[in-house]
Structure formats: C-alpha cells, structure tokens
Image 1: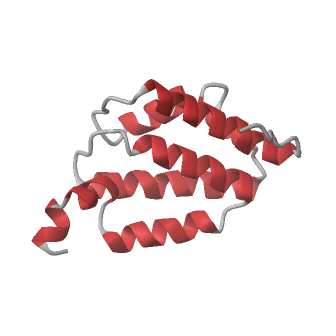
Image 2 (image 1 turned 30 degrees about the vertical axis):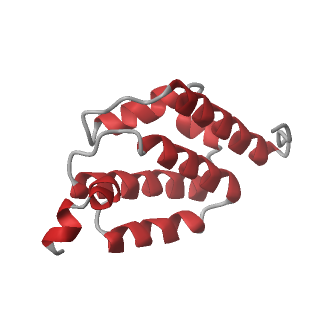
Length: 129
C-alpha cells in the first residue's frame, strides 16, 4: 500500500481499497435482510473516529463474517443484533476503535433500518417513509 493510501482520510475510514471492495462484494451476496442490516451498521460505523486503516478494514471484514455466519445458520437479524442495535454496534466498535461522536439522528436511523431489516425477514415490511 502506498503512503498516500495509508494516510488519506478515506483510507483511514474504510481501510485499503482492495479490502473494502472485497468486503462490499461479500455484503452484496448476503440475503436482503442481512444485507440491509450490515449496510445500516456500516453507515453508523462511519461516525466512529478511525484509529488506523488495518483495524477499520478488519472491523468491516469481521462484520461481514458475523452476518455471513448468521445467514448460513438461518439466524434472524434481530437475534444477531439484539433488541438495541445501537448498543450492539457500539460494543462491536469498541473492539476496533476508541469510538467517536454519533449524532442522535444516526442512532435513530440505525434503529429504524434494523427494524426494517427484521421486518423483511418475517414478511412484515414496514412501508412507511
């Protein structure tokens, strides 16, 4: 990885481009409900202050691992993230960074997105906007 790739802001947030693309390809293969949940968690995780590119890349890869295993086992999204998705994501992120400020609207959006993902699994999709 070049020095520019290591020090750029985007590289600090997502890690090396090659690893990011591989992660996104894995997420794309998940069932819709799991993919929706991962994308919501990914948006939320972008609010955390990056510590280094490798730990952030590992964080997203581990997120994909978790949801791939859940999909393979038939585990519903709600069982993976629990009743409080914000608490789940913040605990998950603590393993990789020191955290950061997350606006209240991002917390609400995460909760709403997980609700929608969980609804997709049961066929009771929420159509409100």
